[in-house]
Length: 336
Image (cartoon, rainbow, N blue to C red; front, top):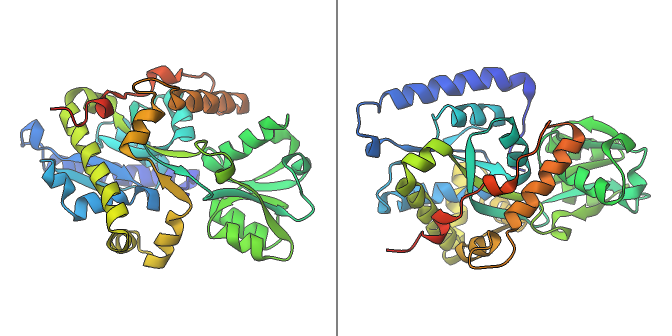
């Protein structure tokens, strides 16, 4: 889901996108600051496609915002452009954000995009009946992204670590394909590989993100400088986003057509992928951050992910979730 990080390509992609974005921004440097585009970097994932709806249906323009949607698949390139200020807003996953902040990612989480709801899962050979049964088995998954985080969380719950399994690192699609081809005992993957694995004679789905709602989430973060200097523009982005979510609910067929066209996927595939996630409404975002009372779920999950990444050695220190989010944009979004 979302994106794949391939370190061998990262440097070349980072340089390429930096040059392209720099040239684009230089062409706008003579404009007043309020006329500069608010650059938003996304990856090819249906959960991020509502930004395309906001663009095509004119929701950004309705808010008086010149927003540019830039597709940057590589996580390293996105983060580099984000930290340099070339892009102001960026999509991420909550678990990835939790390992990015301690490593110098200069962003603040401002709203939750969606929750994975069955879109991510662990497929296993039929003789594997529990996470504990993975001990000593060969498991394929992607490093540093939701598949690894999900697996580490599941292992931790059972008193195991990654040292108890034989890890094979590959992107989620390749992991699913490797399992179907009987090259590994298990894989952490997503659709359509979850269904394909289930259809094999040797495989089954052991667990999915539907069993752990709220654990795997897509989020939107804003560059800290942009949050300070372009606070009103940031609110316009949020209002345009929630207009897009409303449009998906009100006009699902047309929304599916738009998202499919921009993602380069058949509409039926897009509609199927949407079944594996739940977009987070405005009201649910307020509850998520504990605005008006209640538990701040962001802090809980962020700190959980931070601890897991530190235990794994991905990060050397943790950052408390209290300093990584800003809910004031949401709480004041529709106040006059």
